[in-house]
Image (cartoon, rainbow, N blue to C red; front, side):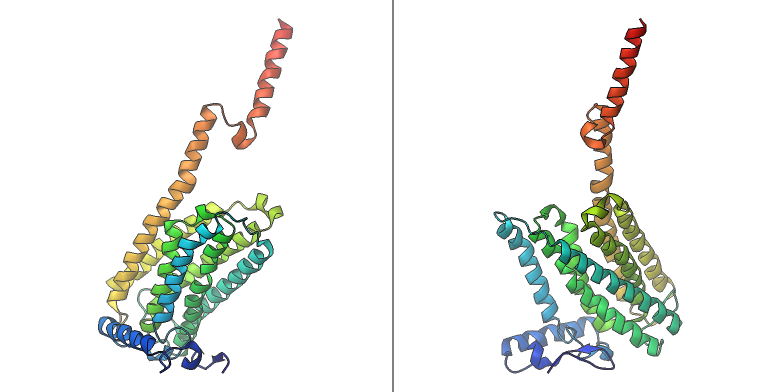
Length: 321
C-alpha cells in the first residue's frame, strides 16, 4: 500500500513501517515499553496525530538518531584516505529545496496563527478550531524536516569539511529531531508554534545562503553569514520571552513543556554564543594582531599597495634632497 495522506495528516500503514505488528515481536515489545513510560511521564498523547508517519512510536526516531551519530563517528574515518566529493549541483538543489520548504512552513504557520486568533502570551492546544489542525499538519513537516537536515552533516563528511562538524552542530541536529517527536505527540499546536515559525524564517535565510555559496561565482557577493548567527541568537531570546509569557500568564498549555523550552533555549544560547565568539570575534582579533605585526599582506591584500606607496614617497624625498 503506497504512502497515503488522510484528512488529518501524513501516515503510513504499520505493515510498511514494520512497527506494531507480529512480525517483529522484539520491536513491538520495545515500542510498548517505551510508550508505557512516556504515557506515565507526560500523560495522554494528543489523539489527533495517531497513525501519522513516524509519530506512532518513538523507536524509529531513536534509531535514526543512533544511525546519525554512528555515521558522524565512522564517516570521517571512512573518508580519511579518500578524495572528497564535490556535490555542487546536488547542494544547490538540496539547499533550494529546504529554502522552499522553510518558506512554505513559515507562511502556513503565520496564516494558521492568524486564522486561529492565537494569543501571543499563551495559547492552549484545543481552542483554535480548524486552524489547530493546519498548525499540526505544518509542524509535522517541521518535525520531518529535522530528519532531512541530517543530510547537512553527511555532506560535510563526504566533502571532508570535518571542521564544520562541531559539538554544537551534532547536538542541535540530534536534539531537534527527538524533541519535536515529543512535541508532535503531546503539544502539536498552540504555544508550540512560535519557535518553529521563527526557525523556519531563519532557515529561509540560512539555506538560501548555503545554496548560493555552492555556486563559486556567487561567493564574493555573500556577506551575511555572520548575521545569520546573530538572527539565530535573537530567535532564541525571543522564544524565551514568548515562552515565559505562558508561565506568567498561564493557559491550558502544559507548564512542564514551557519550562523545558526555556531550558533548551538557554542551552542553545550558550552554545551559539560560544560558536559566534570562536568564529567571528577571535578571528577578527587575530587579524588585528597580524595587522599590528605588519603581516597583513596575506590577510587583506592591501598591505602591498600601502608599502609601495610608502616606498614611492621615500624615493621622491630622496630626489628632492
